[in-house]
Image 1 (spheres, rainbow, N blue to C red):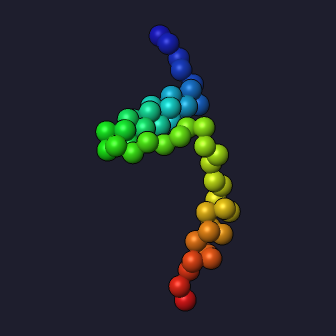
Image 2 (cartoon, rainbow, N blue to C red):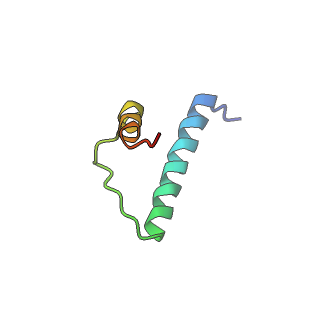
Length: 54
């Protein structure tokens, strides 16, 4: 029997989920540059704190 580690299963699932998400976006006509830099949590929070209505 093939014993696959839990970490291997998690990485595979994450890869498939990303692939499915990209395919879904393509079907909706949304293109995303995979080479574009990714924003981190602090950058996103800073952006929306600037526009926050109080």
